[in-house]
Image 1 (cartoon, rainbow, N blue to C red):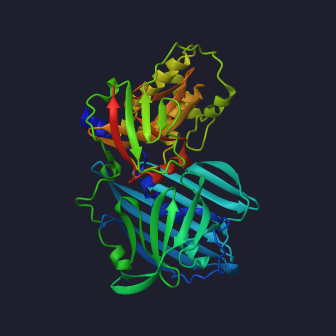
Image 2 (cartoon, helix red, strand yellow):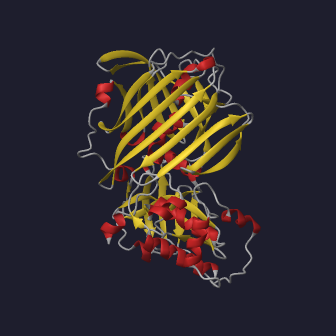
Image 3 (tube, rainbow, N blue to C red):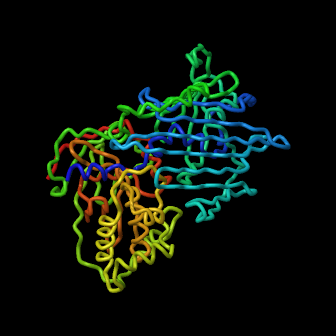
Length: 488
């Protein structure tokens, strides 16, 4: 059983781990007021094509190809294609990311097209600027949902955030703040970029004087070294990830996947205690340290957090509620569909109606749906931007896929549902995981991967929400420390 559970555990999706290195170059960003006055902007002279190798602990796991083409009337078009081979739980999977952007002569953003493809899953996001709005189409190919987001300024886009910082003309120790939009999560986030002291580094057999910039993204630090023309030559980030400029010939060399480090293991956290039977516990107390609490939801519900001490108590599910039980108006928002949780789609609604009966109470609906997802969705690690409709079609996925489908099915039958993300204990370590929260007269945790209602107390909620909210995990990955103090 332990081996089976190991194959269930990874569900945050490697794109979340890798966003620190990739999201800022796939994103749209607009200028926020700088922390200090800036000198006049510096122009960037880009090469028409460049290549970078992606490494994890010095082993090549991917490659990036960038192009830059001049269009009519001073506009330019940029493309970026990322190909990776990623090891999760001993299984190597391919991930392909493609982004095409069109820029106006003043470098303001005009349009973009983002695509993510893995062995089983696909995700598209495309959009364009129309006056004070960003018009988006996101979701599955040929089944995209239109989304309109208001913007206060015309956004900018660049090959990556560091080239944007380079253009501002930052001096040493100066910082500039950006607000970025991530197409994979459809969310806005803040990022601060600081210019550090210049450094000489070896690139393609030569020693090059570079400008060094470091970004603070959700509490995760990432640095880049730029040439005098603004080209990014090297980057480094969390979990041993880095990128470096190479020749086209070097970029075409094979990936070094033999003995590649497993991202699941690298991101996990060792436990100071062995918990033989987590499901039997009614309470656990854990000391949490080395985190930035901004964006995290450590306190509330079954969790109590005070002065770095977290206590999680198992919920007691009280009396069953009848189908016509009134819920607080505030909770109706958790019945609404979203781009990734398509609870109003006919296929989702039809499947849910097969699972539950008209006279079922909310608790009955929750139990039946969680049990159905547990039994019918194959437990397999995947690389994706998970959405319920595609999970229902493919019938496979890790915990993120289980969570979005469970949320969609619950909402479609009138049970408010949310997604929680954090950590769960297994075999001496805490692994990143996702599960659900359902309202059945009270909020109850439910894990369709382990078929647990309520989820055992080793489920440590760090964030709650979909897509963009999960980006807050980047601020703790590779840094958070846990110490189990007591259990009962």
